[in-house]
Image (tube, rainbow, N blue to C red):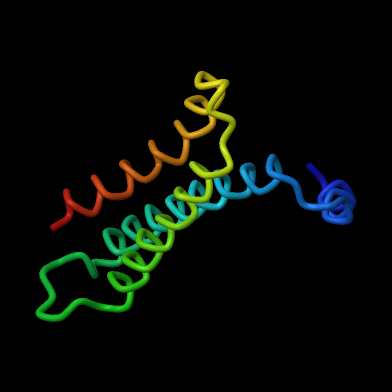
Length: 108
């Protein structure tokens, strides 16, 4: 996907499918970012028991909580007549979310 294609698609009217695509892509990126924060905290030594939660912990929490409205938007715009397609589209964001949460749990 190149930038021309992205901007060309933005000129088209927003429809249910494009909203659904965005609402499943952004949570996956946010989960990868949260996982990156956990790995950064592990490598930098900031994951060791601090008395107060640091900036990394707050950013992690914001990235995780901000996904909830996007998952709801995905559920609202999904084509539930094609359940297998919906399940395939939600697997990556759900798996990355579980991976990010599991890695944060492992470090605490």
